[in-house]
Amino acid sequence: MSERIVNKLLLATRNQGKVREIASFFAELGWHVEPVPADAPEVVEDRDTFAGNAMKKAEEISALYHCPALADDSGLEVDALDGRPGVYSARFSGEDATDESNNLKLLQEMQGVGESERGARFVSAIALARPGQETLVSFGTVEGRVLTEPRGEDGFGYDPLFYLPSQGQTLAEITLQEKNAISHRAKALRAMVDMLKSEEDSQA
Image (cartoon, rainbow, N blue to C red; front, side, top):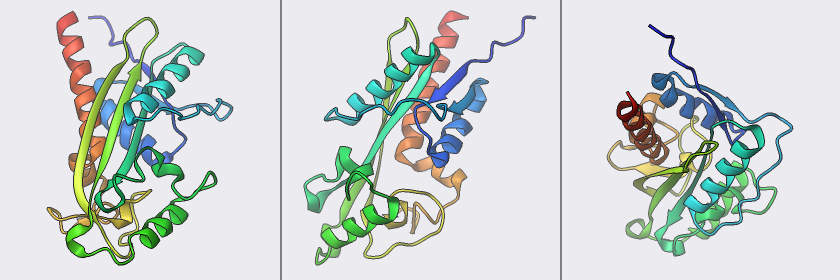
């Protein structure tokens, strides 16, 4: 029996939280996941949709390193803010934004918003680019609401402010295993893995 070919998958991110989360999904496919090299160029996220940004990042990194590349563009859509911050979630508080400054800006803009109007959702688009093949795209969402103060020490981004009524906790309070079962990125990653499994089955 021939040995299974291990695919190298570059992630168009240096966010270690994302790297761990994504690697846990692709392990079942036998793919070796690693972040982009430290000297990789920054891809400008100038598209107006999550899918557009994810595809641009994945395709540019794949073309540069001649191997499969995966990128996600995820963000928070808040009903009371007409869907903002949306595709600008990572730089909501400016070009030098941090998780802390973004969360502070969100709290400031949500001051005075009533409990019934604090609905929000995380949206994720995942793109997988492979040399000579069509780029695959998958999506995932999770519904919740924005709290008036952060809760939890885990997670990253807006996780401490995003409350999941079904769990009674924020995304920063649940375990990685729980998050991988219900989060927007987890749903998009699961859909991507399923697409790749279907490809493998059809080629077997």
